[in-house]
Length: 334
Image 1 (cartoon, rainbow, N blue to C red):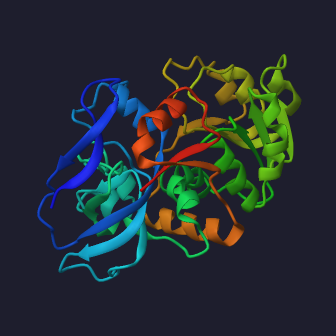
Image 2: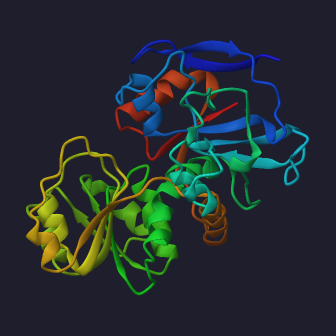
């Protein structure tokens, strides 16, 4: 049974039709007939080998939604015909302290869906069912797919760092991650301030749930919020005036990075010490967090804004993501 997919054969190369034979069906494995797969900017980084980790041929894709078509003998929670999703993680060691505590996303031996494995730019995928999740019926597949990586990436910080409904949250960047962060923070009941380098996104940011909108193209954009925000999620991968960002936090405030900034961050130590502020990072969430995130999205109508294209147009969709022209997530459809 050959799986038909699209693979990059070299760094920055175009994706070409490719086939491979999957591993034997293990006891906890399921086969998923893929209907939709989102394109995350991480997929672009892997295609281009920006992280110097890529092995070719590479089949990207880790925001997968589809239908179960076969199950291993040990699978109890899924059956054929059920709609499920798979995100960035597809495996863990199951015996380290992180796994035992339920935080499989922090396992030192974490296995990624499209690193060392072939991902979701394909007609089918075989994965460990323990990293697959039922998709609530109220979520359309095209809107749910980006939640499995982008959604959990911005939801998990709110959960991990105990953000409360009465708090004021800043979201830096109104893009693939930021437009979801605004929705989740709003659903939490927080007062949300959106920061964006695109002033034309103000109307949309407010429709998504932002109470305030500040263009970062203005002079000293963070001056307006000095000492007013409790928690800031930075979803961008570009340099910011980080001391100014920290000044926007109130005492004990926290800056959380989910966008990977390439250059070192220059932070004056006193900007952290004097008012007990902190800077943290956050990856995807664990299995329970993903389940919670999907339920919350279903209950509050949180949707990824997507542009859906046929799987055969994968190169055009990847280029649109690569050049920041997606508004806000490209999704491939079989």
